[in-house]
Structures are given as C-alpha cells and as structure tokens.
Length: 308
Image 1 (spheres, rainbow, N blue to C red):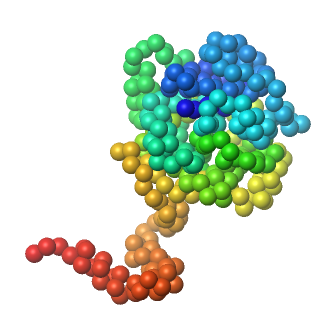
Image 2 (tube, rainbow, N blue to C red):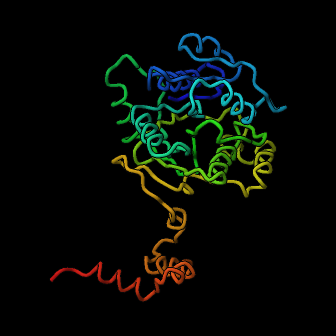
C-alpha cells in the first residue's frame, strides 16, 4: 500500500481549510493508507489526532524557517509502514482515480515515479466528506471551472522506497525541488509515468501572502537561487514534459519518447520536419539493422494508401 508524507502551513484561515481537505481525502483513499505530517505548525498536532495521522513535529529547517526536503524524504523512507511513498503538497485533493492509477503503476513496474498535472480550482469551504457525491461534485467543479496547470507544475510524487537514496539540501516552499525529484528518478533509470489523462488532482487555489513578492518571489529570491544552485546550477531539472510514459484515459501505459520535442515544435511545424529529424537522428541505428530511409518511407507510403 501507500504512505503519504507532507508538511503544512499553520492550520488557520483558508490554509487550514484546504489542508484539512487534502489530508482527509488521502486518508479516505484506502483503509491502509498512512499519512505522515512533518512540522509543528499551529494546529498540526490536533489535526493529526483527529484524522489518525502520524505526526513528526521535529524537522530540519533552513535559517529562514522553511523545511529541508532531504530530511523529510529520508525520514519517511525509514519509518514508513509501506513500500511505496507519495510526497504531496498539502493542498492537493486526491480521489479514487488517483488510487486506481497507483494500482496500475504498481502492476506495471515495481520501480517508477508517478506524476500528473493538477487542476487549479477555487475551493473555499470544507469539503463535506459525508456526502456520497463529494467526489463527483468536486471533479465536476475542477473540470468545468478549474484551470489545467502547465506540466512544469508537479505537486505529487509516488515512488518506491530507496529511489531517492540521496536528496540535496533543498528547501520546500521555493521553486526547483520538484523538478529535481523528476530529474533524479530519470537519472536513476526509473520510468516517469504521467497519469494526467487518467487522474484529476485538485489543487485548491490559494494566495502567496507568505512571500512579499507573491508567487513570482518564490522562484527568484535568495532561497530559490540556493535551490537552483543545488540542482546543478539548473542542469538537474526536469518536468512532466520529460516523462517517459503516460497512462491513457483508458488506463493503458504508453511509451512517450518524443513528448518534449513535440511540445517544443513551433506553431505550424510540419510532421514532415519532425520525421526528417527522426530519420537523421536514427541513421546509424537503422544502418546497423539494414533499415534505410527509402525502405522506411516506402513502408509508410504503403501504410497510408487508401484501399481501392
């Protein structure tokens, strides 16, 4: 089964509402789900007692007061009850589709990183988890009024114990740590499975009052620049666009080797240009197996011919 690890802001005001919504949704995924909450912020102990979460109040912090990712990941991999972990930001509501994606990923491979694009949605009140329709209603709200965020935003990471044998001293609450986690999985040879087409992760919109420059400030201040430096001066950064596989809406796993290249094609770029590039890059391999350009093009032309 699965152990969640996360950290939170103080459980007051709107942050208290969104964080309680997220934590409760995780606990409802399966009776055996474990949730570990790191940090001693206001209200954390009470919420853990109410929801039956594991509370780890002691966490290593940067001089700014923000928490270090490496301490949380290392501790969770040591104390978690289950072999698979999910680091999630504490404002993400997850539902049954997430659990099904997790099960499909485990059945597919034992070693992987599971990610997805989030749906930014206005959620201003506590979710009524006693309602039989809460999942249907929330999913409908996200799909009809929410914004499907860009693949650069990564908010949850499902992985097996041991995948992150080393994590730099990155600070959570500033940019780049999430992109490093994707890079690390890829560099370790683990497939990155994007379940965006299958899952609707609901990110509850919030303000960034904790930073004087708002969201922009979290990517450019001194702490963010420190994170960037620890990520190989920016060389060790990847996003969902670099995923190696995707989970289709029908629940099938598909290889996606050229996703970033396709995304980076300028508007109006032709498939012919993409095909030419592919032929050029695979010339040596095709030569070794005796597959020449004319043969490939002839095969394609026959395949695309319409029957009489």
